[in-house]
Length: 154
Image 1 (cartoon, rainbow, N blue to C red):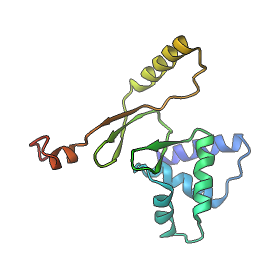
Image 2: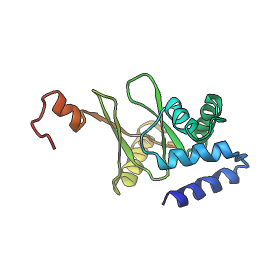
Image 3: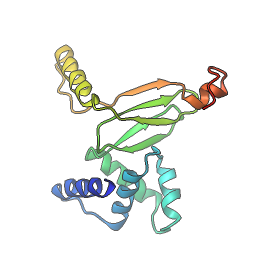
Image 4: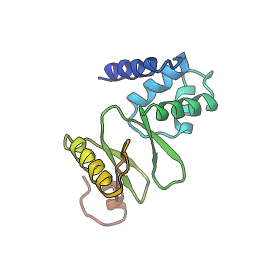
């Protein structure tokens, strides 16, 4: 699946005549295969373990490029840093208000919900909706246990 996503993303970038350097391909592949919602610093640290020629500027510029082409989205989790997520399959996120953990929520109904949200927005504001990012906030199961909000320790 990751290979197909990579090929699809590369094709999209090629359609727009984006130069695909080896570093850009490495960063794109990293984001497709890592569902950890990393920051630029996290991406750099992981990639430099295998290739010390990748710089902070390269990672930053590449993720911004991927955001501009709607392949990657930016996420805020309240810790003051920006996290990134490959958005090949529409999904939404739940963010823990205690620890900042970001979790993907895959649900086949999301595409319909996003379309309905766009239509409601257009009907009420006359905006042309180009995308929507949905974030749900709560307390993750691990923090619920740590905070004594549940006695479920599974």
